[in-house]
Amino acid sequence: MGIGSKIKQFLNENNISQTQLSIEAKIPLPKLNLALNEKRRLTLPEYELICGALGVGVDKFLEPRKRAA
Image 1 (cartoon, helix red, strand yellow):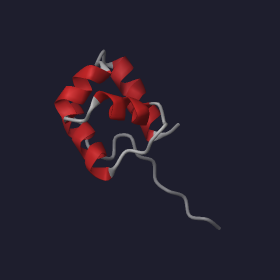
Image 2 (cartoon, rainbow, N blue to C red):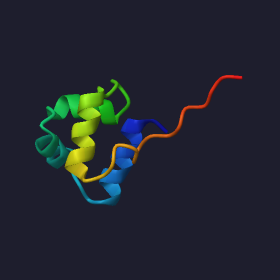
Image 3 (cartoon, rainbow, N blue to C red):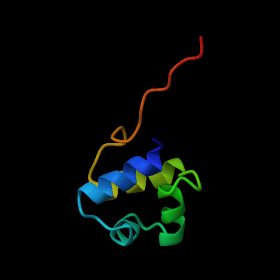
């Protein structure tokens, strides 16, 4: 599951609309929607704004990378 999907799941579990998040994070809704549906990558600044708007740490939706053997 990608970061966008994890954020989308968090929104659903906490009854937060994408519109609310878009307003709070100051990210245009179409751009946010594409990212949450895994059709575009979030930039680091966008990700930080989203985490700030949701009141969670930036590590909330991340998984550690695994090194190739």
